Structure formats: structure tokens, C-alpha cells
Image (cartoon, rainbow, N blue to C red; front, top):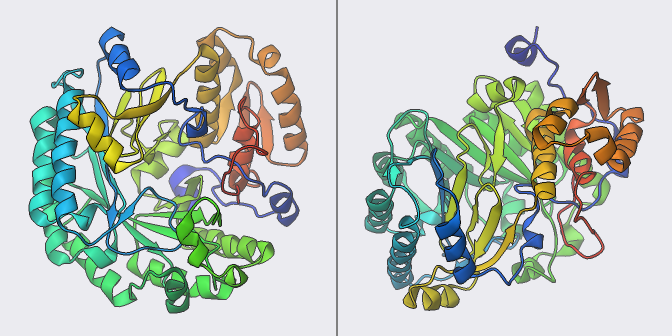
Amino acid sequence: MDMQSSTHGIDERIRWDPALIRKYDVAGPRYTSYPTAVQFADGFGSREYERYLLERPPVIGPLSLYVHIPYCRNICYYCACNKIITRDPEVAERYIVAVEKEVTLLARHFDQRRRVTQLHWGGGTPTYLSPAELTQLMHVLAKHFSLIDSPEREYSIELDPRSVDTGTIALLKGLGFNRVSMGIQDFDPAVQRAVNRIQPFDMVESLVASVREHRFKSLSFDLIYGLPLQSPASMEQTLAKVLALSPDRISCYSYAHLPDIFSSQRSIDRMQLPTADDKLEVLHTIIDTLTDAGYVYIGMDHFVKPEDELARALPNGTLQRNFQGYSTQLAPELLGIGVSSISSTADLYCQNVKNVDEYYALLAQDKLPVQRGLRLTPEDILRRDVIMQLICRMGLDIEETGARHGVDFARHFAREMEILAGMEREGLLASEGNRIRVTPSGRPLVRNICMVFDAYLDPSRQRFSRTI
């Protein structure tokens, strides 16, 4: 009996059907939220957010915090994140002062007794901050929110291996982080040169040893497939090095080449990009190699060790997802802090301004730096529930979902059910009474299955990465 089936009692092996993969390899959302961020409207700003926070009923339960640090010292050509390339050490000091102002304005609306069970610092490069600045920022958060030291907490930070040393790892553990995510992308030197991100294996290996030494609860690697000069053979070499370092979680993201939108991608030679068929074979190599090594595919390009809590959460129905990815500690409200950050509540999404000067200007006026937002309708909430079940449970309980939202599911989603019937005939889904289960052949295509329930989707007007 293999490691996965002995752990879960279910077949976690993904079945790769080339014909179906090619048919469904289209552009689509990643569904870190529904509706997706492209639906946020510019008419929802600081005044509307303040009014919402003042008028909403009292909320109990934990909080989730996300802090965005936009600065990087070097440009990675593939990057589609909101970042500012600079080596000026003074920008970080000014930014932390602004973040403290935002936190002060936000905290007035939230009960300080609510425990922060999930905290994530992303970027950019969070470790652009100096050790003193990292400490200062954590103290800002601790002053206004109830940070905890419970083992169940998820306090994570994204690391660029080029920006940290073993001393930084020790500091981060001391500050309360218990998870780290390293941006690996690819270990092949030629690929690294092509995307302007040189980080030798030895550098990463020493940092991993430090993470283990300091007993972090979890280590994640981020990989990207579809980068210039990648091939199935080169990815096999990268994965061999990844497996030698044995991270607890591995995320494998599809590179979307959109140079008209992301100017740094214009530095990539498009002639060096793998063909569509080669890119699919790279993904096939990733899936086979990681599952053969015992990792569990939990969905949306994420692989975890079978003993990981995310792997245990998948079969028992407690896996959750938000803008920070998969989690077992999802709070009813997520507060996004910093430029471009997104917040979410039961019936609202809102996003801060993306320009740092606008961010400073609004805070100077004692205004929350919100620029866009969306109030969710009951229909949005229903469809979000359906999509999140598919993503997090690889299935859907039709009867229970309909009862929870007060609708006749089959009648309400008659058009969608017809489309799902076609997917079932193709082997992507299986009907089991009042439940729909995503099959091993459908698991790589779960984004496509979710798209069936997306009432806003218009691929002709929206730019998304490809689903495969």
C-alpha cells in the first residue's frame, strides 16, 4: 500500500489525460476569492469602507492578517506582483510609519480580544526590511492586535533566499513566525539567468538547514513552470534537488507571459519559452515526480507531505482557502494591510491603493487607503460556497448546499448541471447520490470545473493565467 492511500484511504493519484488536458487548457481565475478581484469597483473607497465597518454587526471569532511589503532590491523578469525595485534603505522606514498609521485606523473597528490565528507577510520581499525594521513591524501589529503563541497558529513569511541569511532565520523564529515560504522557481542555472534570479542550490540548502535547526513548523517551496529554457528534463533535475531538501509543502504555479501588462516580462526572450506542449509535459513531470515521492496533491497546484495538516484536512472537509492560499485556520475576517492588500469579510472584499504615493497621501488625511471594493450579493455568496467546496473538498454536496442557502440546487443551477453532466461523461466528475466528486482525472482541471459556476467570467475581456 502506498503512502498516500495508507494515510487517507482514498486514491490521491492524479490521472493525466492528454486529450482532456489540452481541451481544457484555457485562461481562467485561480479563485483565491469569488467573485475575483477583477470585479472590484473603483467606487468603493475609504469612506464606504469606514461606513461598512461602523454599521456591520459585531463579529466574533479569530482574525487573519496579511501585510504587504512591496520592495525588492532586484527585478525578477517573470514577476507579476505589485513591487517597487529600489536599494534605498530609507523607503522601508517611511513605509513602516505609514503601515502603523493604517493599523491604528483599522484597529479601532476590531475587538482587540480577537485572536490572530493566521498572519502572512508577502511582497515584494518582506525581508527587504532590516532586522530592526522586521522587529518594529511585528511590534506594531502586536500593539493593536492579539497575536498568539499557540502551536495551531499559522504565522508565515515569504523569503527570497538571496535576501536572508541564517541570522535572519533565527530572528524570524524569535519574532513568532512558525512557517516560511521560499521562492525557488527553478534550480537550473540557465533558467535562473534567463529570469534574472540567481540563487545557487548551496545557498538554499544552508537556509533550509537553518529553518530545520530552528524548528519551524513548516517549510514551503514555490516553483514556477513555463519559464524560459525549461524542459521536462531540466525540471527533473530541479525536482531532484527539491526532493533532496524535502520541503513540507510545494506550490507549482503556471507562468503567464503577459508583457503588455507586466513590463519586466519584456526582458524575457519569448523564443526561449517552452511550447504549449512542452509546458504541459513539464507539469506532467512535476505531478508524477512529486506524487511518486509521496506528496499529496490537495488541489490548485499544491502538494504537501501526507502528514501535513493540509493533507489531513482534505478528506475530512476542513480544508479552506483565501487570498493567502490553503489553510486550516481560516478566520471570518481577513485584514489586508499595506499597499495593494486585499481584505475580506463575510460579504465584502476591498483592496488598498496600488500606488505607494497614493497610499501615503490617504493616510496623511487619516483615511483608510482603500480604492476598490465589492459588496457580495446572496447569489455571490452561494456561488462562492460552491466554488470553495470544489477547490477545498474536491467535491460538492448538492442537497446540503441548497438547504443552507435556501435554494433548489438542481433548478437554480440547471444550466451549470448540464455542463457538469458533460464533464462527467468525460470522466472529470462522478455523481454519488447528492454529491459530486472530482475524479483523479478531473483534479488537475478543478479550476475549469469551478469556472462553470462563475457568473462573471468573460475570458474575452479578462486576462488570466492558463488553468494548466
